Amino acid sequence: MAQEADRAGRTATRPGALIVAGPTASGKSALALALAERLDGVVINADSMQVYRDLRVLTARPSPDEEARVPHALYGVRPAAEPGSVFWWRGAALVAMEAARAAGRLPILCGGSGLYFHALTQGLADLPEIPVPIRAEARALLDTIGPSGLHARLAAVDPATAARLRPSDPQRLARAWEVWRASGTGLAAWQATGGPAAPWRFVAVLLDPPRPALRAAIADRFAAMLAAGALEEVQALVAAGLDRALPAMRAHGVPELAACLRGETTLAEAAARAVAATGRYTRRQATWFRHHALAPSVWNIPTRFDGGKQFSERGIADLLNFLRDSGLTTVSRPA
Image (cartoon, rainbow, N blue to C red; front, side, top):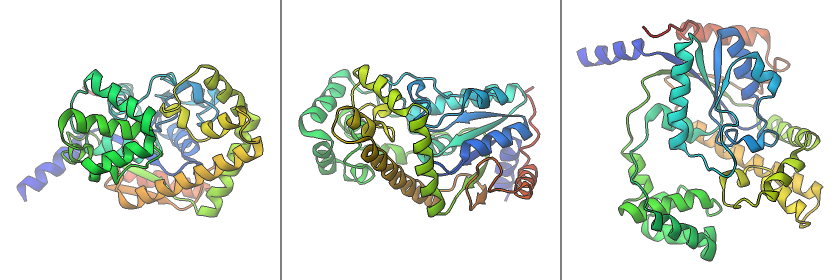
Protein backbone atom coordinates (compact mmCIF):
# COMPACT_ATOMS: atom_id res chain seq x y z
CA MET A 1 0.00 0.00 0.00
CA ALA A 2 2.79 2.40 0.89
CA GLN A 3 4.51 1.72 -2.45
CA GLU A 4 1.27 2.34 -4.36
CA ALA A 5 0.72 5.60 -2.49
CA ASP A 6 4.29 6.66 -3.25
CA ARG A 7 3.83 5.93 -6.97
CA ALA A 8 0.54 7.83 -6.99
CA GLY A 9 2.21 10.79 -5.30
CA ARG A 10 5.05 10.87 -7.82
CA THR A 11 2.58 10.67 -10.71
CA ALA A 12 0.49 13.54 -9.31
CA THR A 13 3.54 15.82 -9.10
CA ARG A 14 4.58 15.21 -12.71
CA PRO A 15 3.82 17.96 -15.23
CA GLY A 16 0.73 17.33 -17.33
CA ALA A 17 0.45 16.95 -21.10
CA LEU A 18 -2.52 16.39 -23.39
CA ILE A 19 -2.67 13.88 -26.26
CA VAL A 20 -5.12 14.55 -29.11
CA ALA A 21 -5.24 11.41 -31.25
CA GLY A 22 -7.35 9.76 -33.91
CA PRO A 23 -7.26 8.47 -37.47
CA THR A 24 -6.35 10.55 -40.49
CA ALA A 25 -9.03 13.15 -41.40
CA SER A 26 -10.81 12.84 -38.05
CA GLY A 27 -10.20 16.51 -37.25
CA LYS A 28 -7.34 16.21 -34.75
CA SER A 29 -5.58 19.38 -35.83
CA ALA A 30 -8.74 21.49 -35.61
CA LEU A 31 -9.53 20.15 -32.15
CA ALA A 32 -5.95 20.60 -30.92
CA LEU A 33 -6.02 24.20 -32.16
CA ALA A 34 -9.35 24.89 -30.46
CA LEU A 35 -8.09 23.45 -27.18
CA ALA A 36 -4.75 25.24 -27.40
CA GLU A 37 -6.54 28.57 -27.78
CA ARG A 38 -8.67 27.87 -24.70
CA LEU A 39 -5.93 26.31 -22.56
CA ASP A 40 -2.90 28.44 -23.50
CA GLY A 41 -1.28 25.44 -25.15
CA VAL A 42 1.46 24.57 -27.61
CA VAL A 43 0.48 22.11 -30.36
CA ILE A 44 3.30 19.57 -30.81
CA ASN A 45 3.24 17.40 -33.90
CA ALA A 46 2.99 13.64 -33.32
CA ASP A 47 2.47 12.67 -36.97
CA SER A 48 5.31 10.85 -38.72
CA MET A 49 4.74 12.65 -42.06
CA GLN A 50 3.93 16.19 -40.94
CA VAL A 51 7.55 16.56 -39.82
CA TYR A 52 8.60 16.95 -43.48
CA ARG A 53 8.70 20.50 -44.78
CA ASP A 54 8.26 19.33 -48.38
CA LEU A 55 4.79 17.90 -47.64
CA ARG A 56 2.65 20.75 -46.32
CA VAL A 57 -0.25 20.08 -48.70
CA LEU A 58 -0.37 16.28 -48.81
CA THR A 59 -0.04 15.86 -45.05
CA ALA A 60 -2.63 18.57 -44.30
CA ARG A 61 -0.24 20.45 -42.04
CA PRO A 62 -1.68 23.41 -40.15
CA SER A 63 -1.80 26.51 -42.33
CA PRO A 64 0.44 29.55 -41.64
CA ASP A 65 -2.63 31.36 -40.27
CA GLU A 66 -3.38 28.48 -37.88
CA GLU A 67 0.26 28.31 -36.80
CA ALA A 68 0.11 32.03 -36.03
CA ARG A 69 -2.90 31.62 -33.71
CA VAL A 70 -1.05 29.44 -31.18
CA PRO A 71 2.52 28.15 -30.97
CA HIS A 72 3.21 24.98 -32.98
CA ALA A 73 6.26 22.69 -32.79
CA LEU A 74 7.84 19.92 -34.91
CA TYR A 75 5.85 20.72 -38.06
CA GLY A 76 7.88 20.83 -41.27
CA VAL A 77 11.21 20.60 -39.46
CA ARG A 78 12.95 17.97 -41.63
CA PRO A 79 13.69 17.85 -45.36
CA ALA A 80 12.22 14.89 -47.21
CA ALA A 81 15.74 13.63 -47.95
CA GLU A 82 16.43 13.09 -44.22
CA PRO A 83 14.26 10.29 -42.83
CA GLY A 84 12.84 10.86 -39.40
CA SER A 85 12.36 8.09 -36.86
CA VAL A 86 10.42 7.43 -33.71
CA PHE A 87 13.66 7.71 -31.75
CA TRP A 88 14.44 11.14 -33.16
CA TRP A 89 10.84 12.30 -32.71
CA ARG A 90 10.60 11.19 -29.08
CA GLY A 91 13.69 13.18 -28.14
CA ALA A 92 12.52 16.25 -30.05
CA ALA A 93 9.03 16.01 -28.55
CA LEU A 94 10.38 15.88 -25.01
CA VAL A 95 12.45 19.00 -25.69
CA ALA A 96 9.38 20.78 -27.11
CA MET A 97 7.28 19.73 -24.11
CA GLU A 98 9.85 21.09 -21.68
CA ALA A 99 9.99 24.35 -23.64
CA ALA A 100 6.20 24.64 -23.44
CA ARG A 101 6.28 24.00 -19.71
CA ALA A 102 9.02 26.59 -19.20
CA ALA A 103 6.77 29.10 -20.96
CA GLY A 104 3.83 28.19 -18.72
CA ARG A 105 1.94 26.55 -21.58
CA LEU A 106 0.23 23.18 -21.86
CA PRO A 107 1.90 20.69 -24.26
CA ILE A 108 -0.73 19.30 -26.64
CA LEU A 109 0.58 16.38 -28.70
CA CYS A 110 -1.47 15.95 -31.85
CA GLY A 111 -1.27 13.10 -34.35
CA GLY A 112 -2.30 9.67 -35.50
CA SER A 113 0.97 7.73 -35.23
CA GLY A 114 0.26 5.23 -32.48
CA LEU A 115 3.87 4.09 -32.30
CA TYR A 116 4.95 7.66 -31.53
CA PHE A 117 2.53 7.96 -28.63
CA HIS A 118 3.55 4.55 -27.30
CA ALA A 119 7.23 5.46 -27.49
CA LEU A 120 6.60 8.72 -25.66
CA THR A 121 4.45 7.35 -22.84
CA GLN A 122 6.01 3.90 -22.42
CA GLY A 123 9.63 4.49 -23.39
CA LEU A 124 11.95 3.00 -26.00
CA ALA A 125 14.68 0.42 -25.78
CA ASP A 126 18.24 1.61 -26.28
CA LEU A 127 18.85 0.00 -29.68
CA PRO A 128 22.34 -0.96 -30.86
CA GLU A 129 24.42 1.18 -33.17
CA ILE A 130 24.24 -0.04 -36.78
CA PRO A 131 27.59 -0.33 -38.58
CA VAL A 132 27.79 1.32 -41.99
CA PRO A 133 28.39 -2.00 -43.85
CA ILE A 134 25.19 -3.46 -42.40
CA ARG A 135 23.21 -0.40 -43.46
CA ALA A 136 24.63 -0.82 -46.96
CA GLU A 137 23.71 -4.49 -46.91
CA ALA A 138 20.07 -3.71 -46.05
CA ARG A 139 19.89 -1.16 -48.87
CA ALA A 140 21.43 -3.61 -51.33
CA LEU A 141 18.91 -6.29 -50.36
CA LEU A 142 16.04 -3.89 -50.96
CA ASP A 143 17.46 -3.09 -54.39
CA THR A 144 17.97 -6.73 -55.38
CA ILE A 145 15.12 -8.71 -53.81
CA GLY A 146 12.67 -5.90 -52.99
CA PRO A 147 10.66 -5.32 -49.82
CA SER A 148 8.69 -8.55 -50.11
CA GLY A 149 11.90 -10.56 -50.49
CA LEU A 150 13.45 -8.83 -47.49
CA HIS A 151 10.29 -9.48 -45.51
CA ALA A 152 10.61 -13.19 -46.30
CA ARG A 153 14.24 -13.25 -45.18
CA LEU A 154 13.37 -11.38 -41.99
CA ALA A 155 10.55 -13.83 -41.28
CA ALA A 156 13.05 -16.70 -41.43
CA VAL A 157 15.35 -15.21 -38.76
CA ASP A 158 13.06 -12.89 -36.78
CA PRO A 159 9.44 -14.00 -37.22
CA ALA A 160 8.16 -11.93 -34.29
CA THR A 161 9.26 -8.67 -35.92
CA ALA A 162 8.28 -9.74 -39.43
CA ALA A 163 4.74 -10.45 -38.23
CA ARG A 164 4.41 -6.78 -37.21
CA LEU A 165 5.58 -5.37 -40.54
CA ARG A 166 3.95 -5.15 -43.94
CA PRO A 167 5.88 -6.59 -46.90
CA SER A 168 5.35 -3.23 -48.65
CA ASP A 169 7.15 -1.15 -45.98
CA PRO A 170 10.81 -0.97 -47.09
CA GLN A 171 12.00 1.56 -44.52
CA ARG A 172 10.86 -0.41 -41.48
CA LEU A 173 11.91 -3.72 -43.00
CA ALA A 174 15.42 -2.38 -43.60
CA ARG A 175 15.56 -1.08 -40.04
CA ALA A 176 14.46 -4.44 -38.63
CA TRP A 177 17.03 -6.27 -40.74
CA GLU A 178 19.79 -3.90 -39.61
CA VAL A 179 18.96 -4.40 -35.93
CA TRP A 180 18.93 -8.19 -36.26
CA ARG A 181 22.19 -8.26 -38.23
CA ALA A 182 23.95 -5.86 -35.86
CA SER A 183 22.88 -7.54 -32.62
CA GLY A 184 21.58 -11.03 -33.34
CA THR A 185 18.40 -10.00 -31.53
CA GLY A 186 15.17 -9.07 -33.28
CA LEU A 187 13.68 -5.60 -33.15
CA ALA A 188 10.51 -6.90 -31.48
CA ALA A 189 12.61 -8.41 -28.69
CA TRP A 190 14.50 -5.16 -28.24
CA GLN A 191 11.29 -3.18 -28.09
CA ALA A 192 9.84 -5.56 -25.50
CA THR A 193 12.60 -4.53 -23.10
CA GLY A 194 11.13 -1.04 -23.10
CA GLY A 195 12.89 1.94 -21.64
CA PRO A 196 12.27 4.82 -19.27
CA ALA A 197 8.84 6.40 -19.69
CA ALA A 198 8.58 10.14 -20.09
CA PRO A 199 8.37 11.90 -16.70
CA TRP A 200 4.98 13.39 -17.56
CA ARG A 201 1.37 12.75 -16.63
CA PHE A 202 -0.69 12.19 -19.78
CA VAL A 203 -4.38 12.66 -20.46
CA ALA A 204 -5.80 11.81 -23.90
CA VAL A 205 -8.64 12.81 -26.19
CA LEU A 206 -9.41 10.24 -28.90
CA LEU A 207 -11.46 11.11 -31.97
CA ASP A 208 -13.32 8.04 -33.24
CA PRO A 209 -15.69 9.04 -36.06
CA PRO A 210 -17.91 6.51 -37.87
CA ARG A 211 -16.34 4.90 -40.93
CA PRO A 212 -18.77 6.46 -43.47
CA ALA A 213 -18.04 9.96 -42.16
CA LEU A 214 -14.33 9.28 -42.24
CA ARG A 215 -14.40 7.94 -45.80
CA ALA A 216 -16.27 11.03 -46.99
CA ALA A 217 -13.81 13.31 -45.17
CA ILE A 218 -10.83 11.54 -46.74
CA ALA A 219 -12.25 11.96 -50.25
CA ASP A 220 -13.17 15.61 -49.68
CA ARG A 221 -9.77 16.34 -48.20
CA PHE A 222 -7.85 14.80 -51.08
CA ALA A 223 -9.89 16.80 -53.58
CA ALA A 224 -9.00 19.94 -51.61
CA MET A 225 -5.34 18.91 -51.60
CA LEU A 226 -5.33 18.62 -55.38
CA ALA A 227 -6.87 22.08 -55.64
CA ALA A 228 -4.23 23.42 -53.25
CA GLY A 229 -1.29 22.13 -55.31
CA ALA A 230 -0.67 18.51 -54.23
CA LEU A 231 0.37 17.46 -57.73
CA GLU A 232 2.91 20.26 -57.92
CA GLU A 233 4.21 19.30 -54.48
CA VAL A 234 4.85 15.74 -55.65
CA GLN A 235 6.38 17.01 -58.89
CA ALA A 236 8.97 18.91 -56.84
CA LEU A 237 9.79 15.77 -54.84
CA VAL A 238 10.19 13.70 -58.02
CA ALA A 239 12.38 16.38 -59.58
CA ALA A 240 14.67 16.19 -56.55
CA GLY A 241 15.48 12.59 -57.44
CA LEU A 242 14.80 11.26 -53.95
CA ASP A 243 14.94 7.56 -53.12
CA ARG A 244 11.44 6.10 -53.37
CA ALA A 245 12.06 4.15 -50.15
CA LEU A 246 12.29 7.34 -48.08
CA PRO A 247 9.35 7.80 -45.69
CA ALA A 248 8.33 11.10 -47.29
CA MET A 249 8.14 9.43 -50.70
CA ARG A 250 5.66 6.90 -49.28
CA ALA A 251 3.30 9.42 -47.71
CA HIS A 252 -0.31 8.90 -48.76
CA GLY A 253 -0.79 10.41 -52.19
CA VAL A 254 2.89 10.67 -53.12
CA PRO A 255 3.33 7.27 -54.85
CA GLU A 256 -0.03 7.58 -56.58
CA LEU A 257 0.54 11.11 -57.89
CA ALA A 258 4.12 10.25 -58.85
CA ALA A 259 2.74 7.41 -60.98
CA CYS A 260 0.40 9.92 -62.61
CA LEU A 261 3.32 12.23 -63.37
CA ARG A 262 5.15 9.31 -64.99
CA GLY A 263 2.13 8.75 -67.25
CA GLU A 264 1.28 5.38 -65.69
CA THR A 265 -2.23 6.40 -64.60
CA THR A 266 -4.71 9.23 -64.90
CA LEU A 267 -5.14 11.86 -62.23
CA ALA A 268 -8.60 10.53 -61.40
CA GLU A 269 -7.23 7.00 -60.98
CA ALA A 270 -4.35 8.28 -58.85
CA ALA A 271 -6.75 10.19 -56.60
CA ALA A 272 -8.99 7.15 -56.18
CA ARG A 273 -6.03 4.97 -55.25
CA ALA A 274 -4.71 7.54 -52.76
CA VAL A 275 -8.11 7.85 -51.10
CA ALA A 276 -8.39 4.06 -50.89
CA ALA A 277 -4.89 3.71 -49.42
CA THR A 278 -5.66 6.37 -46.82
CA GLY A 279 -8.88 4.58 -45.92
CA ARG A 280 -7.01 1.32 -45.36
CA TYR A 281 -4.50 3.14 -43.19
CA THR A 282 -7.24 4.63 -41.00
CA ARG A 283 -8.55 1.12 -40.36
CA ARG A 284 -5.12 0.12 -39.08
CA GLN A 285 -5.01 3.27 -36.96
CA ALA A 286 -8.41 2.49 -35.46
CA THR A 287 -7.29 -1.06 -34.67
CA TRP A 288 -4.20 0.26 -32.91
CA PHE A 289 -6.18 2.73 -30.81
CA ARG A 290 -8.65 0.01 -29.82
CA HIS A 291 -5.88 -2.21 -28.48
CA HIS A 292 -3.56 0.32 -26.86
CA ALA A 293 -4.22 2.69 -23.99
CA LEU A 294 -3.10 6.21 -24.83
CA ALA A 295 -3.19 7.36 -21.21
CA PRO A 296 -4.78 6.47 -17.87
CA SER A 297 -7.60 8.93 -18.63
CA VAL A 298 -9.08 9.07 -22.15
CA TRP A 299 -12.04 11.13 -23.43
CA ASN A 300 -13.54 9.41 -26.46
CA ILE A 301 -15.31 11.53 -29.09
CA PRO A 302 -17.40 9.34 -31.46
CA THR A 303 -17.62 11.96 -34.20
CA ARG A 304 -15.43 14.05 -36.48
CA PHE A 305 -14.28 17.48 -35.36
CA ASP A 306 -14.27 20.20 -37.99
CA GLY A 307 -14.04 23.36 -35.96
CA GLY A 308 -17.41 23.08 -34.26
CA LYS A 309 -19.90 22.29 -37.01
CA GLN A 310 -20.27 18.66 -35.94
CA PHE A 311 -19.18 19.05 -32.34
CA SER A 312 -21.35 21.29 -30.20
CA GLU A 313 -20.22 23.98 -27.80
CA ARG A 314 -21.70 21.79 -25.09
CA GLY A 315 -19.34 19.05 -26.22
CA ILE A 316 -16.39 21.43 -25.94
CA ALA A 317 -17.56 22.51 -22.49
CA ASP A 318 -17.84 18.90 -21.33
CA LEU A 319 -14.38 18.16 -22.69
CA LEU A 320 -12.91 21.18 -20.92
CA ASN A 321 -14.52 20.04 -17.68
CA PHE A 322 -12.90 16.62 -18.14
CA LEU A 323 -9.51 18.26 -18.68
CA ARG A 324 -10.03 20.56 -15.72
CA ASP A 325 -10.84 17.57 -13.52
CA SER A 326 -7.65 15.96 -14.83
CA GLY A 327 -5.62 18.97 -13.73
CA LEU A 328 -4.44 20.03 -17.18
CA THR A 329 -5.86 23.54 -17.44
CA THR A 330 -3.30 25.12 -15.13
CA VAL A 331 0.36 24.83 -16.06
CA SER A 332 3.05 25.76 -13.57
CA ARG A 333 6.44 26.93 -14.71
CA PRO A 334 9.32 24.87 -13.31
CA ALA A 335 11.01 26.34 -10.27
